[in-house]
Image 1 (tube, rainbow, N blue to C red):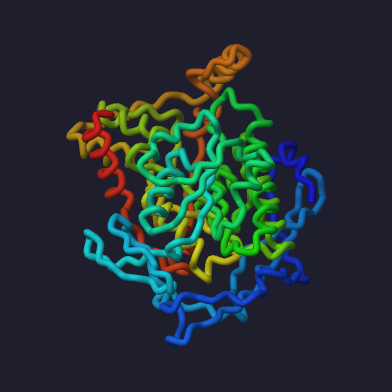
Image 2: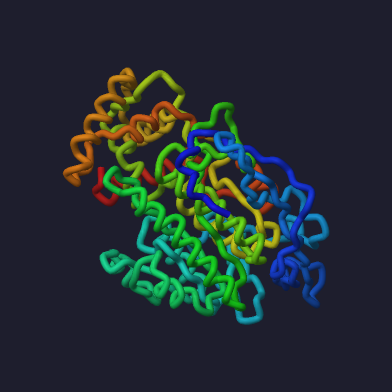
Length: 449
């Protein structure tokens, strides 16, 4: 399957056409032993997982069908336990790890909810992007559960931020074959979190190396690893682009709008097709906008709101869908263990979207500031951004304004995230308002604001 033409038709919608034939992957047909708490008897249960059906994805501009895997809508034939029987992953500040028999221990967290750990203690998990915002949270959470964490880090990565965690570092590029082969050897779980920074100076080739080539290398290495239990691939909600008629779910057409999103879409589509053909046990997650203590990407919104001013370009709603990093990393671990997540795709976001103005209002209220919203015409800003990019990019300078940032205000990102709750039984640690207030408090307590 070739994806070389994806950038050319990135601005067209990709649509699904159901296919009648279903190919039976080899490894997904194997018996999967579930934890005791997921079975109906103490003797242990066995769940036989059927493969997800496939679909044809049609390229409107080329008139050519691209065969891609489709998320299962029914788990026919699979003895998958209900969400009531399967352990829910809740707040993980006081995790009790699994013992060597694979039994899930239960503790009560600081909110009074019962929580269970996910991966068996002593297992080895590979995390890419481990020094990033999301990856570092995941690494700490896995270590707290008694997991041996292996991670790929670039030579220039700031691994000192995790010096208090016994990580097995593999130094190299995530798209280097030798590095990937060494890192993926004999691991039970892979969390492919790595992503290229969304900066104007990053080339399309860099995006493709990090989002596509690294995924291909990891998937092929995982296929050769008989110990692998689950490959959790982290995509992005951005593959859907602007949502014309919100909310959108996992079946909404792809409409990536920039090099970052195009290569993320290419990597996900290749990965799902490969996993289907090779029987690789996988789950794909498409996170919404990630935030939480220590995040710098959305920090600028908190900073504006703390000053009592919010600048919005255009007259749109600016619907935004958030997910707290605590909830996202919980879902990652749940996706690596839950039988119903096998071969599935999930959009990971809060139950409801929020307008950018409402988001800023919650933050301003926390800081005791009245919020003044200033709306500017979007057209002149696009022109200014184009000029900035044309001048700054050849000089290797990050533009103060670029078109992708301007386009943010013209798009709505609102999703139906019910599948996460109905299929996996997930319950959130933070509501949107609670998460924003908790993050605002962290910024103030740590001197960021």
